[in-house]
Length: 243
Image (cartoon, rainbow, N blue to C red):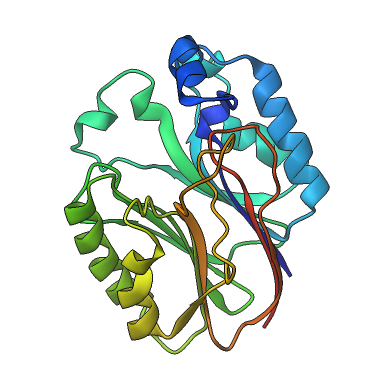
């Protein structure tokens, strides 16, 4: 099986530097459709069985009110589950554009069971859980603040505990390095698929491992890669595995 996880930055495109990112900040308010089209072509070419996308726009002014989840699902012909990343009483649910920001899981096969978890701390609180072919898959986008992120990881550890094999993937925002994941890896006996410590952020000059795929030791890792494409400020992660 193949898993792709990718922070697509709401289809606003990549940049060549932080300066360029600031200079073109207007794209966060109105993103050309061409950025999403490039992302869809890339995802299609990857031919992944499971796709976990962080930072998708579900139909705000920024995209011309186009729901990126529905658009991607239509082009791939995949089943999907998605949700807004902010809890119902959050300020993020009241602000224009932000109230349409979410995450999504796509799968070639039907997703018979899924759950939406909102963590008790942090601004970005959503964890999407889906059971796919006997694997409990969790898509995450954790807090920027380390203190909140630490608490989120503790709650995620409790959520993912159990006898079934687990894959946890997404944007962990580990600005402190992959060492931040040591606790959850030890308690749940998980392996970081990125054995060589390849960085995924920023896409134009990767220096941080913000994105990760953690999986149970019972899952056989066949191949792991981080393609050097610049459709976002993050690079995508691809894992080929066997159950």
